[in-house]
Image (tube, rainbow, N blue to C red; front, side, top):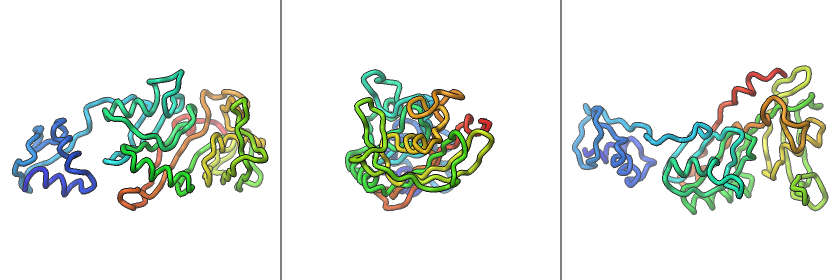
Length: 266
């Protein structure tokens, strides 16, 4: 068989164009040597490898998954998801676009100080399908938050109508959009608790507002809480799951809990 045929068997979800790009960028090795000839004859005894991209990506963005349609990354706290008038280059989107050498379509955002899983689309069709999933709340989203105090009951649901004011703060108010947040206490100490939070809706600042209005603001929240404590906002997007629009297969991606979460004294 040819090298291209061998790669097709090994990577059935990747297009021939992608496989040829891998070869032309010297990512495909046959018996340890780069090979660009897609028609080269190979046998079962040949060792075929695909090595990682040589381009470096900013360490504040870690790639969790990539295929022809989308890229999923773990964003560190402290950087924006997309460019703004004030910050044009130091964002998750620009770091990934530089790495891929192509433009990406934005389908979701995390606050600057929230870390965790993000997905970007590589084409308009996938972007629209993913936006439809988010709009229909047909997305699995799990966050980890460390908050002040102990919630009673230890698990439950917040429901309210959220509206953004002229001061850009989000509050529960009549006439707002429905927001539903489920929470479960997974650990607690003398002054703080760690929660697993599941979003049923995805309003701006939803988790931060609901926990603050419940009297248990997230540690490190400068807008809805007690100010910056312990160096960061303790909110992390742990899991993102959805049905892949192209394949119809349910996929799920998890971002490891940051070191600060594991070391904080509850």
